[in-house]
Image (cartoon, rainbow, N blue to C red; front, side):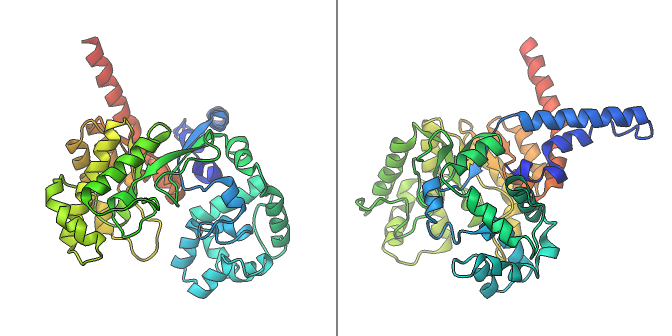
Length: 404
């Protein structure tokens, strides 16, 4: 969906079209033909149904009921929640003001008084452009100001009603369906299974906590084998309808997962669930073991392993040296599990050239551009341009091999 919301600046259609016929700009005929080609390509792209491969959407009924804490408020400011909210924090907004903008207590019209201080500086960030394109597409409002906040709120309320998920996702965005990493459960079968496909979220199964959401109420855990059985249960229950598994542990550690046998971490696991202190080295060994247990299980069921790489959607905590190591760590994963299909999200921004090299070298490595247009549209365009020659080389080599 991101490529549509930033289409005026950097949609795939415009990115492709901008690379066509740019050397002969002085020739009026060439300019006319170039514009025609751009229009044809752009129209074709927007007419093509896409699959949104990464979302954190709750079901529509939960959205309409404002399930907390996922839906902090129910007014126009909700459209700025999450990514634009991170920009607000980076721009220096106080915690008190931030909480007011996304609270249910402050009147929607009064929220503009807080946001207006920051809007001139953030409206042209990618998340600001996404918001502006969203309100233009959905409500016919091209920008926000004190004069139109009331109208924006009125149109928001008119749109937010039963059936609006399908209307926006399929009718407006031309997306066939979304792949959802549930924010509230390891796996949650959607009330709209033809619209919101589900991945199995493995974070809570790899990074053990005392009472994670991944453990059902009636399940008692007293040993590592119990935890293995829990993982087995999630896969048995969900594999028939899951589109894949999702791992977001790159927010909390490097992706340098090593093979560790169960016997090496059994005692560590017991101490962990007993709320005893374990060392960082022991924590890594335990996570390494559980990571590979989950990945091997996904491979057994033929499910792709989707992994967060690159930029963090957080403030003031990102460890850049971990992010920089993502490509080499991902290469190690591909090498250790050649039968596993690894799907690496977000281009590993800003280290996307290394990910191109990874995809060129490893047959089980796939690069997914989800979120990349929202992080940095110019980098996304650059990625596509750099992808062209390696892709052609792979294609040529493959065809020559088949001839032989």
